[in-house]
Image (tube, rainbow, N blue to C red; front, side, top):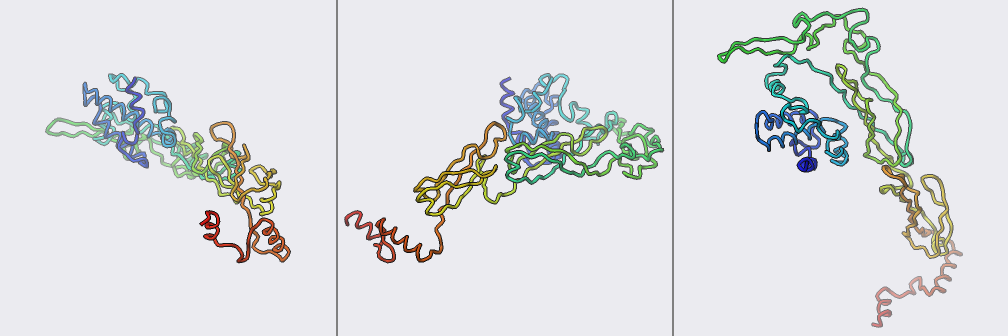
Length: 390
């Protein structure tokens, strides 16, 4: 629809009213507040509210997902697909009759849960939760960044305890049914009020909603089911990366809760400064010193590149600051074929000390060239007068 194209162009952070550095909790809180306000159940027949509600959900679907959010932050809507969500659209979302696809909640039961402490309609247990993402800062040389890098890195993360296989209980022991909730994971409370009898259901505080209690926790993980471990991961960095680029490695983050998927590992790239080369985009800049004799008479010299030395011809009469281009000697393009160029800037070096013979030869050169030296030359303004006949 034409309206969908307009929605996809709007800034998702602006839609939810949060800053670009907002936390996941802040994004979730803003989403819930707006979703309650514009929910179709509250605004029956209000097409503008329906449109706003769809817009809010579209923004939340992207910003709640670390992978989609990272793509959106780096590339905007262009990095998320045709509808701006990175998912190819919200299936069944046009039909507001069954309220499917509403993110964290889709009906007034879920909204009611928020106001009355959760689990008010049946004491829902916390379901599978995705694990946290991890960050690894990788320092590369300019050559590694230019041509790619492959190696093993070592990270420390939480992993399933190999003693109890994640159960949290000491091998050979078993859990027992929680006496407070009788294994349901929830406690029901009844309250009589002037408006009638109200029944609310809360998560059992003794078992944390699990329904079972571990009497003998695993001595390796202390009943948590997870322990910190070192893990080696093989990584491949594509050629052409630069400082600020990120590489996502799926499912190498922290483990999820209750069978939820693992988070992702993000490799943050930092390229060390080079002793001779300077990078400008995918081009390499290098200054090379030459003598004034080489500049005047011309020469063929060897210059360094990222792949070794090559010969460069210096034409006679080369001026200081002249730039020479070595085609395809720069950095490989990250998202396309080909490479940048290397630019050689010549720096004509004037000797600080000359011996008597060198000075004499230069004086003769000056005489032949018609140059006046050592106090015999005319001043600047005198030369101007001579030139213009003043």
